[in-house]
Length: 276
Image 1 (cartoon, rainbow, N blue to C red):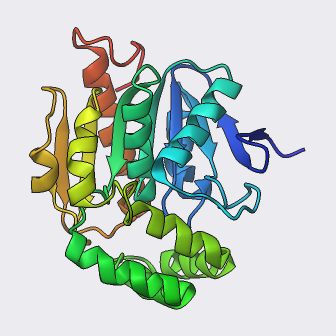
Image 2 (cartoon, rainbow, N blue to C red; image 1 turned 180 degrees about the horizontal axis):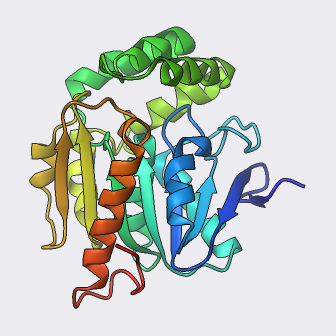
């Protein structure tokens, strides 16, 4: 049987578990799946208990009509951790997963010990996202394919583009449409700068955020939020949106170095024993 956890009456979330040690939860991006984290999961599994999920409607998780709001996806993540008996975890997210991870940290500060965010997509300008949301509602797949083209730089490998296109074309159109629109419209659209600015102030744990050279979210917006001394906001300007795939060894090394620094401070945020 596939490992899965029922997060409500109609939705089962598929996950895989690797290694042992301090718990790490990996959250993928929009119209993606947990396979995106294969490199980092294998690295961290040397000395962590790594949980890789396919968020609702994505990958191996059950098809669903939704809803797909960030808070709902965060509750799914919390349900997976509870189902596995995990009380506290480092949460690592990419793209949509950065918003879901942040929502999990706000709604369940007792669960999230630290956040590692690969190319955050919160803080998006309202005027930029409103026409994108409208276009996606009308033509989900066509617009999504165009958006994905903007996620790459000239050095992004061809295999990555092909992999992502094939997966995107197999993603249900309601997931493509509704998962994106829920992040950037309505009162729960915490990916928007106007909505997310106050909400994200509720994050109380250490944050490592690594931005790429693509997209409209800016690290300056992130830096304007309240931060702890342990926080780091970096920019890899020569990389595309999937920077954890384009530079897997460097991203894993950065993640380990930062977590190791946290473990050696007086802060109890991250359990000791994280390898440098």
